[in-house]
Length: 178
Image 1 (cartoon, rainbow, N blue to C red):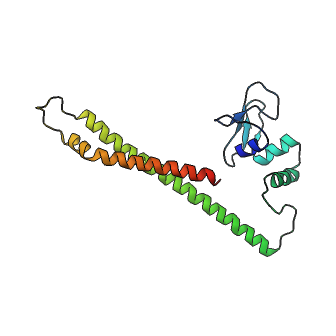
Image 2 (cartoon, rainbow, N blue to C red):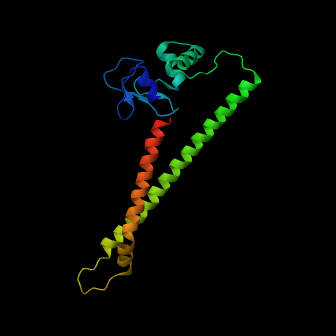
Image 3 (cartoon, rainbow, N blue to C red):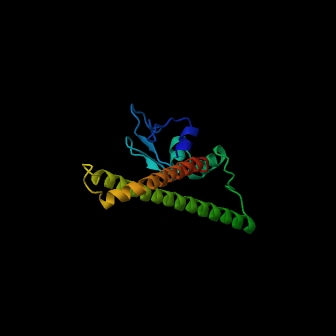
């Protein structure tokens, strides 16, 4: 939805808000949600999908809104065409492949997030142990958790850095492949 808003000339702030194109207002109460989650206006109460927005904004029927979206974004969808069985099956296959790719990207993102938080938790545990069990005097014996923290914290920092880089690289790569 944010991409569509930009295409139609509406500037969104970092949170995805802008002045509502459907009614006049002084401050932005229109929220464009990422992906296929549509929009909501907290001022006039309008909400819905990308198609609903095009219907409302341009005053179009459902079918005409589909045609406009197809044309404006060069989707190449066969709206209004009769499809033979082979074309129908090919479109179903392409849809299945897109869904499979989206699910694989979602699973990869969830795995990267899980890896990051596991690395963070381990680093945090070791850092806390290093601080909490550090000897207060040179004569005090070394606590085993302090020794473990000293031995393992550099590796934990390395794992955390790798997890951060992997998340960053994924976000960079994913932003180029909507």
